[in-house]
Length: 433
Ligand code: SDX
Image (tube, rainbow, N blue to C red; front, side, top):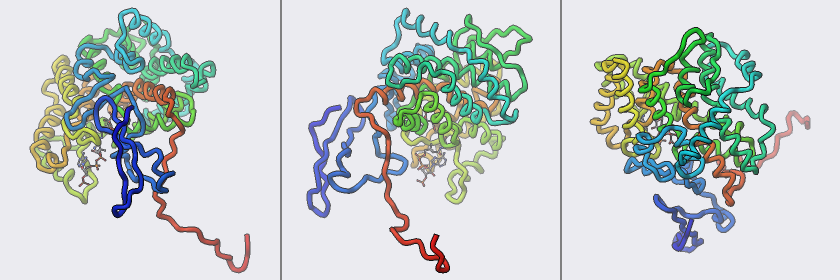
């Protein structure tokens, strides 16, 4: 980051201090306020970090006004069309797309780590069969740190790299186990002859009783869905992973904190909430009722899958997700799918409504993802776990970047205190404690 300009801070015309302005390769410049408190005795105030850059990063760039998303400089549209999810994983972790030799080695390493320690299966038995998969994911992914004492030194790049491979390889296996556990069906072991997504689909949807031949169109669609979810700059769950990692916590604990944060309905839980919302709306004739509920300040209902903190234009991932949705439904002979038609009409009506136009509320990545996952035979309570499966590589890339950052220190925000000032504990009936 460079700076040649400065920002002058004054109060009632009285100069307080000058702060350097830093600028990156593209996007908004930043005012470097690291010395603000020691020079002014004041903090900045920014709940939700709407105007705050928490770090410098080279991984993902979003232009919310223009609806642009770049992974390491490559547009999401090109990556979704020309690359596989594992190629995108390599790109996010290493900064460049792999050549064929690098890709072969990376894919081999991932494949060789897809199995989990057999003791890990015992953790599932402590849960009721109807436990939410994300509750199990938090427990089981967190438990991984108890199995890999051989590589928990976060200062070691070698340890960080093997942890990255283990997490990218094992999270799909654990996601599939969560689903099997909830159905009472036996866990399916990975098969090394299958690709990353073929393996996941077999572990998730097959049983030991039949041969499983994944549909290549559906495999490609799911691979693309994972690419669309792989990273998204400093979103809530990624910021959680960075903050957890800043204390020196091990990678499995940090990724677990990201999974926990992603579960919220305002974040990764929205895809499951969208499907529930569409099923509750039920019919095109009921759309105006729900549009009015979303606009009613006294009603806490929100149009799930709509709106975004950064995108004030169409989320480029939503466009790609809608196209993937159509591709999958057509392949499955479901192009008349009621939920998809309802979603298309809901989008059309909302985008013509002044409330959504003025507030720049467009469909986000979650609006269509639930419909295509539903069509792939994945139950809605698994949708956020699927999101976590795609986002694991983004969390790891940011965790690794944070640890390698020379400016890195433990994250410790301050506050605007509005509570009671200092006061004495009253004597109680003359008794002193
Ligand atoms: C993800 O950060 C990321 O990058 C996240 C993500 C990623 O890849 O990591 O992109 C993934 O989390 C996508 C978002 C999924 N969540 C939803 O679809 C839930 C529904 N959306 C909203 O809850 C909301 O839009 C957020 C949480 C996504 C964004 O909230 P902000 O930026 O804090 O905006 P806000 O809540 O202040 O809303 C601004 C205004 C408000 O009205 P006013 O108070 O100004 O009058 O817009 C309204 C809100 O009431 N509004 C909505 C709405 N979203 C915002 N009104 C109705 N329906 C909605 N969906």
